[in-house]
Length: 161
Image (cartoon, rainbow, N blue to C red; front, top):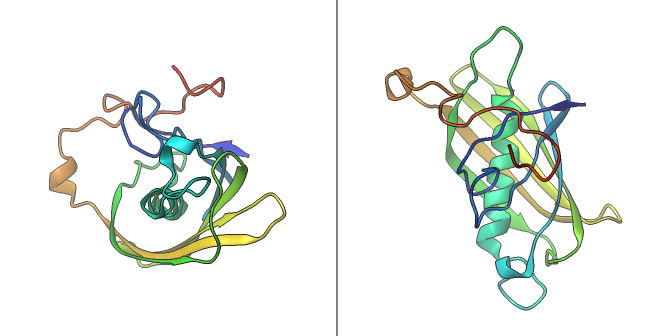
């Protein structure tokens, strides 16, 4: 399974973000992304339940990763979320290991439709989202070197460079 790049200060994946979630993403095949995480109680809404905004952030990130994956010989594709429809199926617990999955539904080259899901260890669907991602315009990225922005594959040991 291929480990994907993360950034320095992204809230969901940023290795250097002291208050972030530090998710690490892996791709078992093109168009699919997976992560395993345990959300700390400091991100709860109600006691023992992950805040809905945190759930949405995780689903947004895993969904977008399904289309922006780093491909050999190609520049990294950066996108922004144009729409994210979240369905909260069951309370997402803090302190328990969660399986997070994203996959590509459709890609037109500029706009992509993606899906993200969060499952508990028993395989029960807890939350899901479908989103529309749009390429960031080239002129906004001009002059930015992804690696200088901290965009790279970090070691597995706790995510610290």
